[in-house]
Image (cartoon, rainbow, N blue to C red; front, top):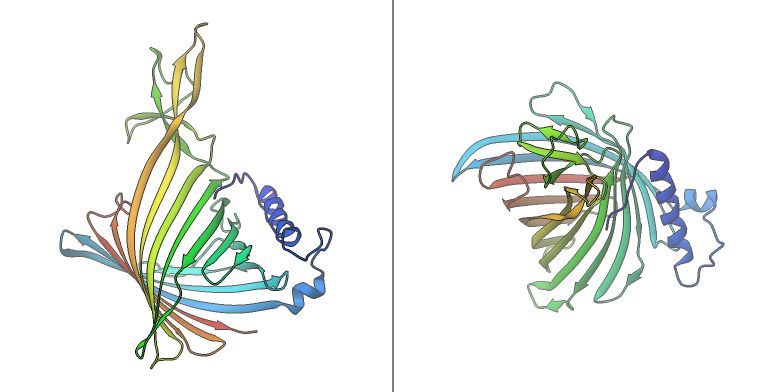
Amino acid sequence: MRFHVMSLAVSTMLFTSTVSFGQSATPGVAAEKRASALDVLTNAYTKVEARHGLNLNMEGQSLKSSTPRVEVRPTIGTRLVDGRLDVSVTFGAIKQADAAEFTQRNPEIIAELSAFSGDNLSVTPYLDIFTPFAGKGTTGKMAVNAAAKTREFSGSAGTVNLTASLEPGVETASSPGFAPVDIRVDRSGSDLGLVYNEEKSVHETEKREPNLSNEAVAAITFKPASLPGVTASLGGFVDTEWAPKYEAVLDNEDNVDVRKAGYNVSNSTFNRLRLTWAVNDRVLFINDTLQYIDGIYEKRVDGKRWENVARLSYTLF
């Protein structure tokens, strides 16, 4: 689910490759066929989304602090290959509660290909690139979402179905950062070309391999018969990340080699209650209430953390 992105040029190349893959791998579409400018314009869409987020930081059972924020996210995109390939660019601005003005969000490029879609199974590879134009560097993610759902169980109150999905992936950044090093030789860190992190009291080296990840989700969805356009879902998420780690070893010729020594594995879990209201073809309201159980924000808060994100989206065309 991840790939290596070292510059905007590489990001653009991968993005183009994904689009080409989507066109050549789709049944009934010739490999040499390319989307024309007319196709892009004919199938274009534009929408604007306003978000309000509220973070509740807990200390034990007590509320430690609450942090609101406001976001505005305009999106332009197009649907190609008979609507199976969705390519979009999302811009954005964020205002934190303690800030006097909005800050720019890195423009985000997303390409999603509906490789397979059936009644009970769907497979969607996607490419997600945060561009460097807001001054924060380039990050990229390549993933495949495989989702399965049961048939709908209908009754007088409404319909219910169960879903489960796995999303393995690979992600990298133009500034890959550092990884811990286990030193197994009697030499100083400077001789090995390593960096000593005084805060963590460990030696580190620049990360050479991308991170690997997987997200597993199980959810139940309910559509009430008396409220057309409304959907409620409760889901549990388990995120696992494999970050490369390294060791410095001495070979038989008294040379020092810094090499990969496996991965550090971390897990995080959260629950999400989502309420969705499709007001009409253009207006969509989504409210997410999230409970972070452990792992995701362990370095920023003590204990559990709650978050509520309300989103109102309007499709212009």
